[in-house]
Amino acid sequence: MKKELVVIGCSFSHDYVVKEIDGYREVTSFSNNGYITYNDLEPFKIWPTIVAERLNLKLVNLSMSGSGNERIFSKVLDYVSKNHKKISKVIVQWSGILRLDLETLYGLRLLGWQHLNPSNIPEHGHPEGFDQVVKDLAKKSWPNVTSGINGWLRRVYALQNVFTQLNVDYHFVTGLTEEKEISPGVFDENWYTKCADALLKSQYFDLIDKEKYIGWPVWEDLDGFCFQDIIHSHEENNWKYWCSQTDGHPNKLGHEKIAETILNEI
Image (tube, rainbow, N blue to C red; front, side, top):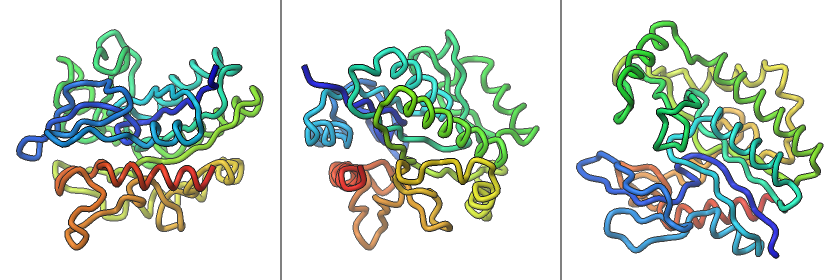
């Protein structure tokens, strides 16, 4: 029996069916057998599928679009602690540090989890009542750079130690670094610099195993990278690695490029 490659992340690592209409992106199916079906294009393999095939491992993909780092941490910890003897490798794709997750009966789309949009405008599809929660948190400037960086690094360090204790091979990588929206449609121009500074000042910075974190220290200001940087696209290259001009998720070429980066680093 093949051993497992366990992958978890957000939409950058998730197989799904999606329709984009007039710039609005709607996921219509949250499981697609290791492929993405985008509009009417031919389905294409996501990077976890490619990597699992190249390593000759059985893929267990726990990723879900919209996930933040609390869900990613919790789901992979639950799975690995119970199934570590079956696992050959774990790849954890961390998400944006501003995303908030709640484990709740209402989060049916995320199988028991509800993602809260950190901006001032609630995400489309929030259950009734969650919109006010998001607005109230935003008024208190939460999440912020301190809560975001600290929350992410604590989870990285915790999993690093758990995987080592269980003798499970692993790598970390970041999918995206989100901007901070300070008011509807207005973003903090110094956000990435603030994140880089907070990372350098964190007590956890020197405790993270840099050999196990692909792209460390993540932010371009620090000569790091994430998936967004790997598939950076623009008008001059005809949005080569994006699903569309208005959708920066990886297309077929984007997932292939991410897969090659992963395979070269692990």
